[in-house]
Length: 360
Image (cartoon, rainbow, N blue to C red; front, side, top):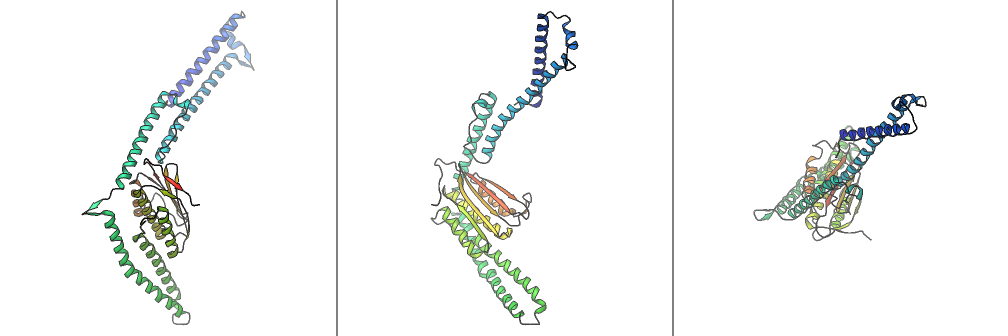
């Protein structure tokens, strides 16, 4: 690629050559018609009250500037094609197009394009290896790591449900009874506002506990498709939490390891939304776009500063690690008071093409 100084040199040389060609052509013409003092004629002859020499110099400078911008345009056009290919690779779209014929004729561009293809092959290979590795169970003392984690989560969920959840429910019943009694008792009248605040706190704690139990006791696919598992999770969520849900989930068929990771990620995202976002509406979209699985979860909650490492950092870090483990990428867009949008892309690099069929 040429730098700015190289383009300036080409433009200056072009302007100088044009200037000399104009002078040579003009001298030959004046010599042919019998003019004398050829060099002096450049300053004697005038067009629009300006010497001919100035006009020739201006035309040469104009050609120089035009050539500079033309070369810059061609180079930016070439770089734009390369940039597009690199953006495709960065977003996981490994089926990026080849360079067009006009650019492919440039030897330097062909070399760069060849290097990009090599990078693409390495990325595809790495994604395939990551997905194969994630499908292999990790054993700890003869038991898979996932099984150990699942049993521990179930144990914690049972203990929370049998103790804290029941106590919160009992406290809520007692506060409801006190609030009802305060309607007819003058002694409790000064405490009505405080009791209402306590009732709201207990109610919020109950919602938090429901979300936490839903996260700790995940629904397994158990032979269902990924779409069926997600819809079952969302329908169960609708019965437990007051939130408006909207979803569009396609029936995609990929490896079991990717299905499991996507299902766990959706559970994590729903849990984060319920526990932290304070959202009134939640949207979930899952589909195949090109050679990528695209998952998008959007809420209208309180949002957070994306640069803040502590805002939901553990859950989001866990999600990023899961997606990176299958060669995917995670994009988070959030602003305080404006909700959050999380977009996940996972390239499908196995030999068989992904099959997606929309609900009829």
